Amino acid sequence: MVYIILLFIFLSFSTCNLNIDINFLAISLDRGSLVPAYIKFEGVGDKLFLRVLKITGTDTQRSFLDAYTLANPGCNVYVDIDSDVEGGSGGLLFYILMKYRTNRTGATGGIDSQGNIIPISGLYEKILVGSKKFDNFVVPVGSIYQYYVTKVLPYNITYVSNIDDLIYIDGRVYGKSLETSIFRLPRLPNSESKYNNSIIKPIYNELREFFTNIPKIGIHEIDNYYDELVNITDKIANMGYYYTAANFLFLASAEKNALYHLHTNQSPSRIKDQAKRCLDQISIRGNSENDIAALTRYQWAKQALDRSYNNLHEQRFQQYYDYTQSYLWCRLAISLYEDQLVEYSSDIANLTLDWLILGFENLGDRDIDRYKIALYYIVSNPVLAAYNLAFVVRKDPSLKDTYRSTWANIYASQAQYLRETGGDSTEVVYLANNLETIFGEGDIVYKLKSYFDRPKINSYDLLKLKNLAIVLLLLLGLYMLVKLTDFLLRILLIIIIVLAVVMML
Image 1 (cartoon, one colour):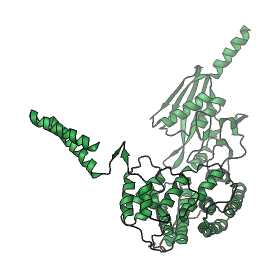
Image 2 (cartoon, rainbow, N blue to C red):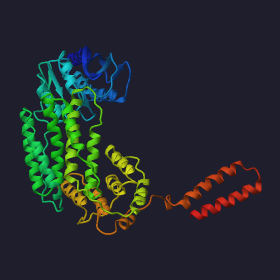
Image 3 (spheres, rainbow, N blue to C red):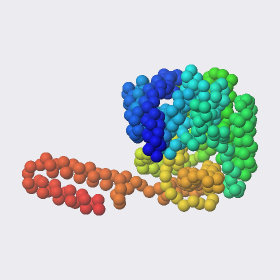
């Protein structure tokens, strides 16, 4: 028994008396780089000591600490990284080092406390530079593009999505996951759409023609996925969900076209010029509901051409992707444009201004864009401002069974699809109701005024000039109360302040 205990202690100290030199895969100046590190296992314990030249954030430390905790090496570990480190993409490789004590596997990917492996950027450059030191790689993939990268590079690359997918063979670590979750097809709804959005049917057909005319990439898994995708979107469209089917095909078209141009090494300017020529054909003058939808997509097309990119491989793919989206947005704008002028009451401008004053402090990027469009058009086209605000207002109206607005019908159909397939349709329902309120039949102004309350704190209406004036008077009175020295004037001022408070109540 004593010998067994001594042997256990000896083995523990021997595995905790180890030095490893390793290179972490990183990105530096838009290129892949190898970051040298020295790792020392010393003494039984559970302490991690991490030294870098410059701590540039908590992501690196958290990723390494999660990897160390999950691997539970049973040693105190000292890590000396001879470079600035940023981000958590070294977490997967560090876990492999802690768990298997081998430096013969290249790996890149974030890691969380649950053992999930998180996809990272710069995968192409990291694998290329890593091939100087490693002959096999373990990586997560989070997109079709990243899967494509792993297939075109001539290296031994396996996939991992959780630490449970790792397997140790002959001094190297591999991923035992044979499939990746990125090839997910849209779900079919249980029943046909209750709402008429057939206006999108020609748009879907145009997108389908564009999608099917893009040549195959030449990678079986990707080409097979795109073939299956268009079959599914056809079924969704045939059930009346034309907008939903068009959404799926729009994103897939941009992605497939980007992959094809990347694969054939074509210049991004070719697609960009195509989008510019399309935009030069459009001059939207109408303000009907469809004209507003067309103008919104025209603006998205212009925005997609103005982004900046670095020299990373994935950024080149992103250029192809954005420029394709710009062209497709432009084509959709042309399809929707009607050139109709519709008379709306001028009261909408004042009402929409009140709506803007509601204030939105926690908007996402896309909502911020919509909000800016609304601000820009508040005077020249108040209906367009209201249309865009419908995307960001978070009211909770009761869901109606029928919709009179074309675009309310479209979004109601999308909400139904999401409900039937397990998605979150809450915001789509809000949008459908807001659009129905704006563009529904009857007195638009009356509907808006009765539907949206002015912003209030407790029971005080902040938009009333009277209350605003009283608030300013109170502030001035309090200031004078501090400054005045005459007793009678101070008493008089106190009486005025009390009367002002009573008026507010």
